[in-house]
Image (cartoon, rainbow, N blue to C red; front, side):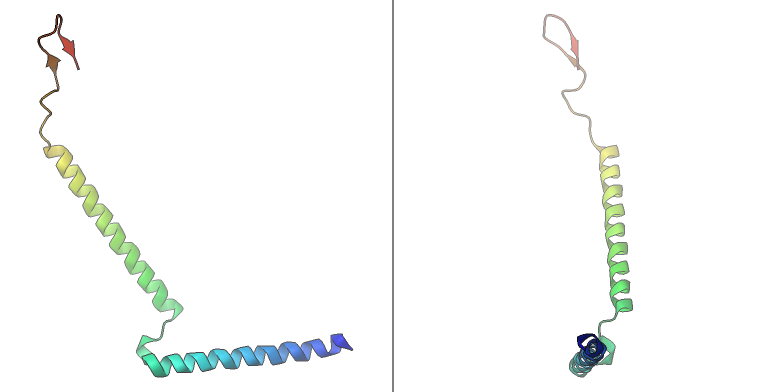
Length: 90
């Protein structure tokens, strides 16, 4: 008899969950407005834009580092050390 009642309980549970989800969505729409309701598509678009922004910033930083490494002045201590008993090349 318990197995005969199980599908009915499952159907009621699904109906309650569905009604609760619709209620929450309705409250969100009423509070935020239809244009500001979060959707999976909107979340994915925001994530894509954030990834693109990070990639642009990373490329800019790589270009800056490359430019700085090309224009860096050589260190004064490079080359041959003079004044020792014999010249030592670094």
